[in-house]
Every structure is written in structure tokens, then in C-alpha cells.
Image (tube, rainbow, N blue to C red; front, side, top):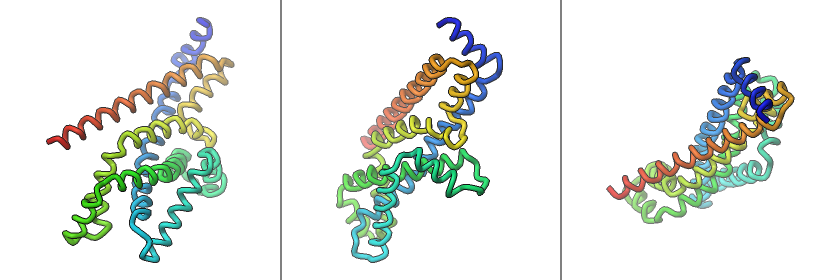
Length: 230
């Protein structure tokens, strides 16, 4: 085992491959964080449509499209979505593979966040919406300024879980030639002909990331509770 560790660290530091790992770490965080932010924007929009009612034909039609989008991205594996976008939709476009991954993970996250946000919006007292409409605010303004900010506070722990899931799911980004953590450590494993040590360290890095995200979410929750009390 000591010989395997020596080989791993030698290849990692003596040959400068730690830079590849750092790039993989950066890309993993970019994909996960940007994917969640895109997901929150898309998910909030779709969720607002779902709770808006179906009296207006246009809203009803868009709501159906939102349902189809949610069902499609929740019902298919993320790896299949990545491959379809890379080899079919973005083929020949020259778009950066990292941006491809961010877009796909954002769309995938939006499908899940839409249901999270729908539950969050429904958890906000209906009186908040009625008060906004009574003051002359439109449905859109009421949602954006009053309801959705409160809904996000209610679903922060669930959004934290979504960020953790996205972080771990980025391990499949290498299938479309994106250098993520998994791809970086896989390259080291292939070069050293040893898969045990690199993948143990890969698992350790993911574990540390998840712990840090969990702690960050708890800090955000505590601050929001303090701000509500004030």
C-alpha cells in the first residue's frame, strides 16, 4: 500500500498533475453551483405557472409545457441528457464542453427545483398573495417580490440537498470530455495502473465537499432565522 501511495503522490506532485485535479475541482464546483442557480430560476418560473391556475389559456398552455419539461428531465438519466445535448443538439456548434455541462445540469436541476419551489410557494400563507394583489400588484410582481423570496427561505435545506446531489452527479461530466474531479482522478489511475488509491482520494474529496456544503447550508439557515427574529 505504501508503494501505491508513493506512486500516486509522485505522479500527482512531481509531474504537476495536481493542476489537473484543481481544474477538475473548479469545474465540478462551477457545474454544480451554476447548475443550481439556473435550476432555481427555471424552477421558480415553472412552479409559479403551476400554482397560478389555468383560467388563462396562455398560462394553461405554458403550464402544460412546464409539466412536459419536468417529466422529461426527471424521467431520464443525466448521462443520457448530456450525451444527447453533446452529440445531437450542440454538435458542430463549437460550444465549450464546460458550458454544455452547465446548461444540461441547469435544465436537469430546474425540473427538480420546480417541484421543490412549488411546495415552497404553497407553504407561504395565501394571505401574502392576497395582500399583494390587494395593494394593486400584478401576479408576477407579487410572486417575484413577496412569495418566491419567502418560499426560498422555506426550502433552503432541500435546495442544499439538490446542490449536494448535483455535486456528486458531476462525476458523469467526463463522458462529454469535461474535465471534472472524476475525470482527473481517472486519468491518474490510468497512468499509474492503480485504481484503488486514486478512487479512494476521489471519494474523500467528494465527502469533504459534501460536508462543507452541509455546513454552509446550516450557516445560511441560522442567519435567516436570526434575521426573521429581528
